[in-house]
Image 1 (spheres, rainbow, N blue to C red):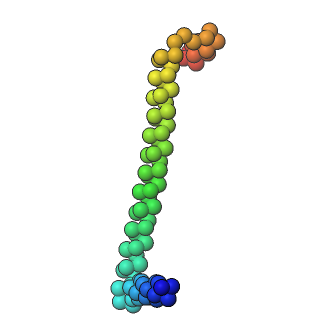
Image 2 (cartoon, one colour):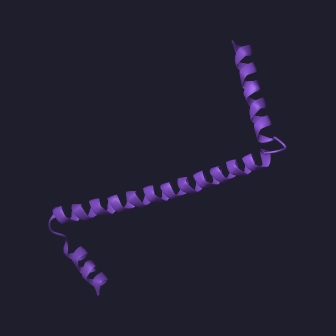
Image 3 (tube, rainbow, N blue to C red):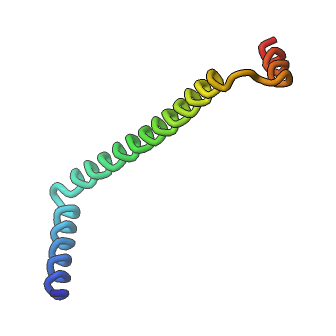
Length: 86
């Protein structure tokens, strides 16, 4: 079974190498693969940034809701808030 797996893996790698390094169309295939990889990388980065933004917005909304229902604030906090607004 191990020999069969090794033979199939070797055959697959050989076909991939032949497909990629073909003298006639290999350059085009490699550039298309590079472009697809770069596009995927940009999209993953944008998705990660959007996920981080969503997380921060959610935490801010929860903090705002918590302050609405928390009740009274101390005098020191109220004084600091007034100073910050001025």
